[in-house]
Image (cartoon, rainbow, N blue to C red; front, side, top):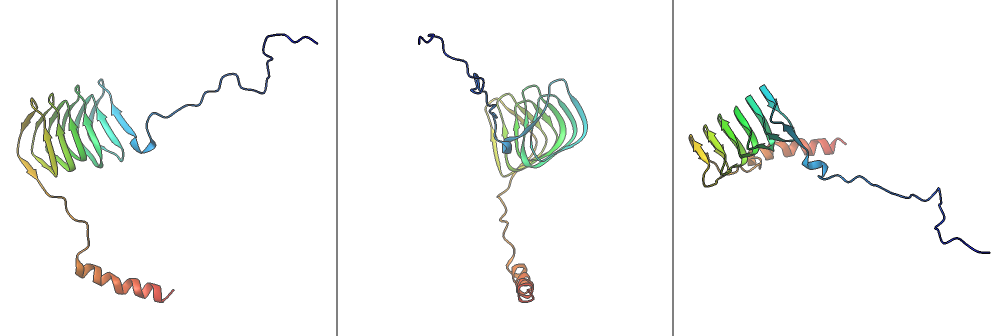
Length: 157
């Protein structure tokens, strides 16, 4: 028997398989404030934030990065783990890790941070205090006080 040269169609075999791929891992989530947005008040969160619009008030992201884009304009006190400035920031800044002011960025306000980087061409007006990272170990007398409690808890179990 003669067979046709054309491939046979099988309805069970997929002809085109597509699997969506995430571009960033879930730990790298980032919220964005776009160019046309204006936010007045207190902004806080537990993910990174990218600002390309205007924010007035306070920013509190103590465990994450805040990035002020080239079109970003922030008139607020900022508390963040990391702050990257490519736009304009007016207000006091406290970073638990580092502050990075890029060449097109400007900051007017006092700074408290562990590490700081100011590129050539950037503007920084205000006081700068660079602190050493604090050790998170418990004081010895506090650790000794907790030991008998832990022993009592295991003895009663």
